[in-house]
Length: 233
Length: 233
Image (cartoon, rainbow over all chains, first blue to last red; front, side, top):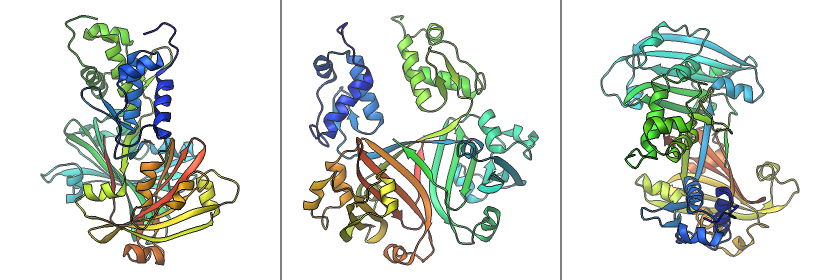
């Protein structure tokens, strides 16, 4: 490593990316070895490694065990989604956040809920239905099931003032998360809650979290008509 | 750095994550300095740095300029989405891929298309409507606009056999991408193309790509009823 070296790993990442964008290296092509790139750019090999890691994380190149790198032959659009707690999302969009507990009940979990949690044995779970509001208008309706074996403390939490979304985030960090995105037609009860036309197309984010193998919660967040989830990369 | 050190950065990441999951460090809490963790775990400081980078990438901790780290006070659900080319997606789900060009026309871009591309001046673009099929049945309808100034070569490409999705991915790598996810009701023409009921709730992925400041394409991929986008982390 030369002491005059001034390239940051981001500079190196951009130079390699430019070589790919310009077509100098096409899909499937092998890139020079890290050590040769480091030589050519007069930077540390670890700088090239950091740059390649970033390009690999972005789905642009593939790293192989023996240190070889090639341009992904089968590119994917890779995007990082940050889904904040709903209160923050409303506030980030400039709205005033509100919350209403609609129903809290212990009930035998239906098959779909058990499957989402990767559970096979029937069991009683805590179902929490609640409405998130922006400027007093419905924003997201959440239909949540919480696993009482994993989160027995939830029994003592007052969910009329504090919502389950925030309580869980603050008190039950998860180690694994499944997300599903899809569209549903509003049935009469959801249409009524969200102030939408029956049959309106609604965007759904379904999220299930676990701590190790133990499911914490599964929730369908059903958004009001016109809702969009946006990500830039 | 001790020569007996055996912890990988993944081991270190998991140990720090476990300390957070167990509640030893709660939202907003400051973690020990990298050097102190390295001391305690008898590993290299660079190993701790790599572990912290991974926890930061996952949205679990926040790194500060002077090397301090704290548990994110305002946790987000961070997910990485890989959206493959549609052919690959169909094949990964076990289907036989098919493709039909529906219409190819040069036309003045409507305002929404210009806005998606961050363009202000009206212009003619290439509009390509096409259907992706799985086992002969409609899978995704794509309504695409391609910027002729950025991709003049597209004029010579036969899009009846090769689809624009794959041609662009192979020939026009992008440096920036916007993604939007939302739900729409099927209008009569989309319903007809996707073999769905008029008014059915359909999931849409809208994607716009640029190379530097020049827009390449913007596309609405409208999926058949029942489609789900899934990610695990």
